[in-house]
Amino acid sequence: MASRPAVEPALVTRAQRALCTILVAATLAACSPSIGPRPTAPGQQQWAPLIPDPTLGYGGGNTIGFYLPTCTRGDTTRCLQVVFAIGEITPRTPDDFATFLRLAAPYLPNGFRRGQWAVILDSGGGNVTAALTLGTQFRQMGWNTIVGLPYAGAGLDSHFSVCASACIYLFAGGAQRWVFQDNVLAIHQFSDGDHQHMNVAQAQYLSGVIGAYLFRMGVSANLQTLASLTLPGQWTTLTIQDALALGLANRR
Image (cartoon, rainbow, N blue to C red; front, side, top):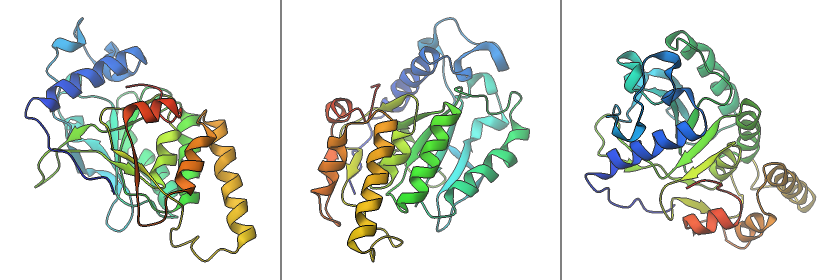
């Protein structure tokens, strides 16, 4: 997977300010007055650190985990309305996400309103079918997706969120798809455990399903072509401009 670039000390603050501006532009409640007073100039706000709270989440371990930020328990006027999705995508991931939404709702005064949330993706991929299912749900919910944003975790230094392999399909599901860094999106042929023993007909069918999904999401078919030309175990990373040109990202 794409290596993680070093994080400049001031980058977290700049990225959070940029993210807030993004959320304002997308009329996300994270930067609106719906859950408390918000500053007139978002760029002047000191936002709470982006840290996933393992006690405010579901999943994890050998499958992707979904987490609210730690600031959800504190001053929500400084807390961006984001969800972290961290780990490997497995067949249970769509169901885990539904469970997460149900368990996390009591912590949110306004719930998970349509179009008012963004998902920070940090995943090396996994099950393609599950990724297509959950990506579709993101789009139906009007949620946005984000990669390349720095965040910190328990015992971890700040690092950039990276989205590779099947995670690309989760990213494509976002209504607004933001990429903050070059080479944090990485693609190759699908070959996860559920699909590596498919026959030719099954492989062609799945390719058709992926193609139809990308078309619905407004992503160029050239993305699938580029992925198909990259062997498993190898990676083709995308710059911000690559992602924009392919329609994979629509914001930067």
